[in-house]
Length: 146
Image (cartoon, rainbow, N blue to C red):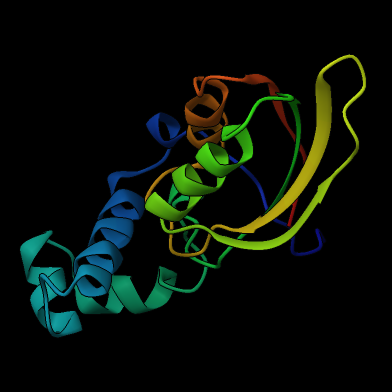
């Protein structure tokens, strides 16, 4: 007997029904469907199948349950660099929980930042990419995720 556990499985090896459940949940979340019945009809899924899987099938990239991300960054000691980083996070609807910037050494400051990404429309790896493209940002990496 196996214990309940979470698995990450590529969608191309799963039956289509799981993708349909995720799509129905997405329609409900975005308000494109107002009832479960309507969402199920839109994706050609029975309501009983939706109810069977709705609490156990999640899209890894949509962060349906919210996610706290801790980032480590190296920033050049130049005016406006940190401000640009904060603006990117705000534009993506991220909620900054903590910021800890150390004193620059050789014109580079290390920074750790904790972000609630619950309302963001981008995945954490996309956030890292966008931040790393900002002028003055030498390095960005995810150090923890909840």
